[in-house]
Amino acid sequence: GGWGHRPANKPGGNGYGAINAITMQAKMTLGMMMRCGLDVPADKFRATHDFVAKGTNDIGYVESTDFARYLPAAEPTSWIVTPIGPVGRPTGALAVQFPMSLLNRVMTFDREWVQVGMGETGETFLIGPDSLMRSDSRLFLEDPDAYRRAVIAAGTPADVADKAIRLGTTVLVQKVGTAASEAAQRGDTGTLINTDYLGRRALVAYAPLDIAGLRWAIVAAADSAEAFAPE
Image 1 (cartoon, rainbow, N blue to C red):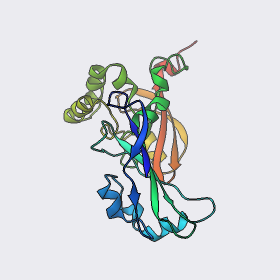
Image 2: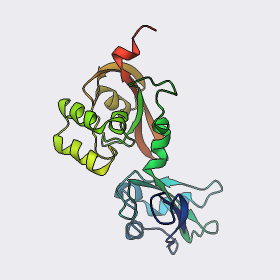
Image 3: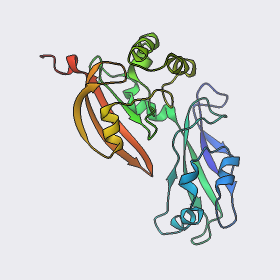
């Protein structure tokens, strides 16, 4: 069994509640995960026996899925999964739903960018191995129309910008194919000045982020004019 997040705007929301149980005999299979609505990349579960074996040691084993669309939820969702049962004989799996909104609150500082010292243009965001955002763009949250104008001028197709506005998020929609994001995805850490996804010259810090097998990158950026403005 497991627990799933129930958004505050849904019946019985604003917290976590029980979700359907996942059971298995001796092993977990990709098919079972998919039937339960968990969008799990096939390459992460080719070695099902390895997954179970890792879950039978003393310290346990946890697997995380990348964010993906999940029909019962109103937002992209990740899952944190671990085998459960007697040592050596796993009989099920515990799956915890991890909604995008929880991660967004951390990455966007609850939208209090100025109060935490990010200035008027500073932001931090996550990028997946597909170069798509895994947390929301600051400008998108502050002014969707300004976001649309900026990203289209910078080369994002208009239908992509419109999709972000229609879905209410840049997660799994906005591509960040910059020098900084590409360097981070190669495993590099550093800082540079480059043109960002908004088409502005920005001071950018970047680093790879490997969390339970997720190959993400983290980026912090600010308009270079603001970053280098005299105090």
